[in-house]
Length: 236
Ligand code: UTP
Image (cartoon, rainbow, N blue to C red):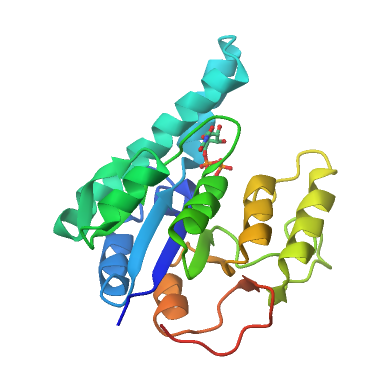
């Protein structure tokens, strides 16, 4: 039977909250287990370290594209650390474009990517990768437990959605972009690609790596699902 293909967008703040107290070891065990049941592609983010480099570059007078290039380098650095931890289970290079990701996947190993090009985030990379490989599912492992109607840290009346359609997701992203300093869980490029591809998206709390196993392997309902139709109970 053909294995299902799953793309995981793994936030830098989830994988490497700080270099010393990172979650790489815990993710390595979980990802090896998941890889027995499906083909996985992981897109690693830059986290706080990327933001620190970007800020210093801006203070030095660098333009936004140059700052983004630094951000991309940090995502690839985090991606390399995950490759180091995964050993034989992973293709030993970080894919630098979508064609490479597809080629590396021919080996049947886990494929790792970081950022690709300026003016976007790794959310967009993961959505385009999911579209280009025809993924069955895109998972965004982030530091909140789903998509809310408003920022739950600022608005006590914010509610968490169990299910959204891609169009409802786009409406929420557009609304939140209008408020200054808003930091939406999914960026707009990713939202648009998710809408046009129709690939289901699952947004879950990645601070506990076990959530990834529960959602992907056990089909547990964790976080928010974005799909054209309401999800049925599912296992892979
Ligand atoms: P992230 O994807 O980690 O962005 O990329 P983020 O929004 O800070 O991540 P999360 O979702 O909160 O974890 C870090 C930075 O790298 C650059 C951007 O500057 C981004 O903010 N980047 C990343 C790119 O320019 N292009 C890419 O393809 C990826």
